Image 1 (cartoon, rainbow, N blue to C red):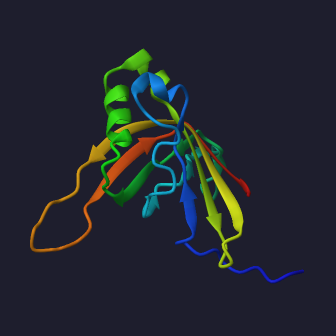
Image 2: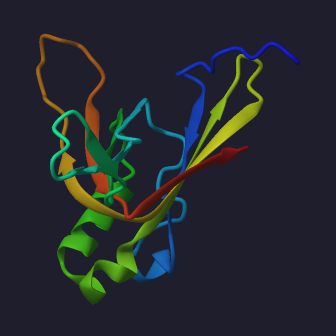
Length: 158
């Protein structure tokens, strides 16, 4: 059995792809691989707890519905406004948002930059977009942030 080492959190690639992007004046993928931080890759199993009558020492846990987190993407702001256009198209109710839904494949690599894991999120829809804080005395990179809801999440080998 080969030694398995933990994956490194800073070797990742992100792509947001959208079907029929020309309709909204967008490119596909939407700014792929340009994110500095990704959070919200999570699934939660909501348990249902049942008590058996007369048995006060034990409770039974049943599998309940699965819920997903919200993906938060952060990147240094550029002149590429595709995320802002995508958000505006989805907020405008274009086909109830169905025409603006994106897919999100994310890949995590090992220390030698070999892809190891793939995170696949489906039916991604923008929830929030945040412009960077502007402060002349900081001298920091302007970072924009987007939050995205998704309907399913799987992890597979790359």
